[in-house]
Image 1 (cartoon, rainbow, N blue to C red):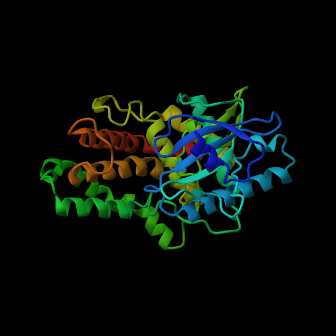
Image 2 (image 1 turned 60 degrees about the horizontal axis):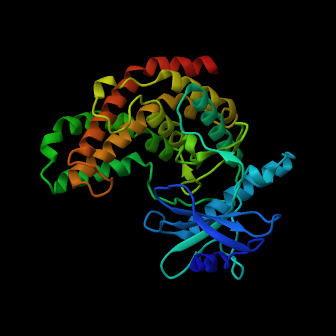
Image 3 (image 1 turned 90 degrees about the vertical axis):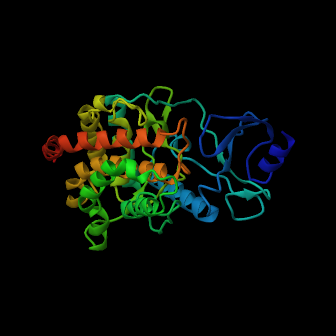
Length: 361
């Protein structure tokens, strides 16, 4: 623990750190809670950042600090009470104007711990409405951020890039698997023109990029003990993207009645109740800044993300499972067929989705 306390000591924290213990079970970063001695000093969260996923720490922390500072300024201007519990606060180093420390092996950062909070993971229409409203407000608060943020994961939600990765996988076919998934490759090709329209609209100047969270789920919201929303967390993927990223990616997981690797694909029926609750919440807060073309294409976003995940899972299967962790040899193929079933269900509901959005406007 003394090594960890030495790392904490590099940062300009308040109080005297006395204990460092593991916190949570994050899949990408490793997280610890730092307890301080003084009763009036805050506790802290220490994280080692996965440099393989986020190679540019200057960009990553530059994005996060710009976003949290901008949100804090908005909350202050609105005289919001209890601001320190409603936006994350990262701590700089003592001796450098930097928000991370490199110990020669790992990259570390520290933020203030927010006490007395709850996390929620269950997907219900009520939680879906909360997620929609919270992330819509998050985008709205950042719609006028005065600086340009970088892409922490380049081409993360760029469907043209993902399709090129699939073409490369098929051309190389290192495991001889392309022939057995010919049906899925044909279905993907059939939809390519429609599914790449977001990138075309962007090049034509018709579709803007916004600052998005890019990992919308109820787990990434911190709640107060009374169940009210405090703030959005896990800001590593906050970057410029189409609003479809936050909208479509949430529905891809939340409106699928099954886990994304469940082989029982005949039971997959896109949950329109989750769609309606989420969309109503989202448009309540994001509607003020969205353009007509963004709103009109929200049903497209609901289809785009199962399509994109199908493309990614299938490319990984053909490549020999080099990216997504697998538990058995056809795991990525099962995931691919699951996402294709979800895509077909979203397509079957398109008219209903369009009519519901029209009814809200």
